[in-house]
View 1 (cartoon, rainbow, N blue to C red):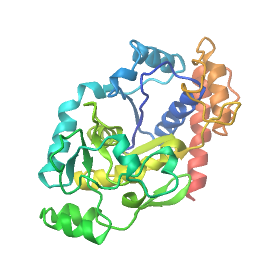
View 2 (view 1 turned 90 degrees about the vertical axis):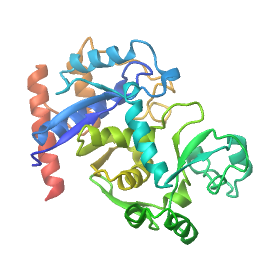
View 3 (view 1 turned 180 degrees about the horizontal axis):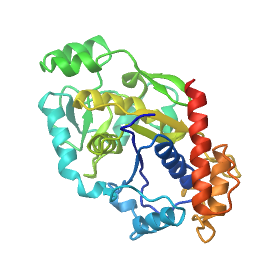
Length: 313
């Protein structure tokens, strides 16, 4: 087992946890405990207009009711803007980030593909070589996978960063899904670090905070798998370590879509925490038989640990 394991659960306080949230929280907690490690909670509240007042405390109370208590005080992203600015300044100083004047309509009009990827628009690099007199709205990360981009980046003399991130594809090993790869420049384009509304983008914040908290392992839903390559690019550009990743199967609603607040998932009922944990455990393939909360969690840790060991043998 990894002696230095540190994992985390990172909810956004846009409302209380639901059944799908508990599955992710439980899995990350079990993985930390099975490896004799620490488990942290990070409140990802950078997008303040979407945050619900008091939701952070509701989430922490729901977790505590289920016996999932973090080993350190929660970290709030809304209090860490100076750290994100330092990271952005570092990228800008090496010309690995640049200002962008494009609106969504500009990006839509520049599309050449028939369909946007995952409903998102691939940024075509319009502002990569300057704003052409337009005011900056956002800041983007310069992806470096094609020869013309490498040549442009070489002019920055950021040789170490260039050599580490200028490649055709990012590859990594997911602990559940196996080998993964993505050509970020082709699949995503130069992605946003600081949004036009002044809020920090998820990709930058999560990379900075995972490093600051010493996170060695990220256990999260499969819907976040597509973010991983971008985060690895940023980790390399900022000289930060890359955690191990495990992406979980999604908990689906009756209509077959991901169970989420957006599609009407009900708040998690913690009046019977053991029942809620048993339902979450079934989603993870776990069936402890204990009828006391602490005993159930201990048995679940044993079952998770056996599954991890079996997968690594």
